[in-house]
Image 1 (cartoon, rainbow, N blue to C red):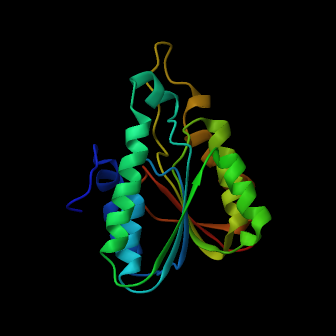
Image 2 (tube, rainbow, N blue to C red):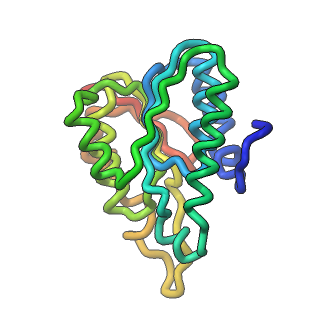
Length: 207
């Protein structure tokens, strides 16, 4: 993905390979991602999907960073600027129209607004990669499930991510317990798909 301003290769190292295979089988037209950072995943989706058909993509982020970004002193204002520049470049590179909707704010607020605004059951691809705090991940999963249509793909990032804290790993400060709880509680409404363990891929089969 040349020409973009990315300061890390997280997306390329964890998601690009499986997504290349995934998008040979599905062609979502309405996408939402929770957690956009510099736009690596959004730019991939715009270029990959916008090359073949019109695309509607919704990006939700606070651009204030999680606790791990704040403790590391990441300049989140610059991260947001790079996101906007990168996605604008991606849109300029595809021949089909791309409707990019940026929802700046807490995902718990923004996803509820989308539900209230008539988007319930309308998304066919959902990517959850926002806060890594377990309670936040569970809330994102529940709301994202409501926004997804039956047959939609839901992808959860950072399944095995955990902070190395002075007192050890904290189950409340990593996504895995929340993702496991969501899948267990909705087990009859989901198909779990084979994928690398760092990400979890599920398909919604019913409301």
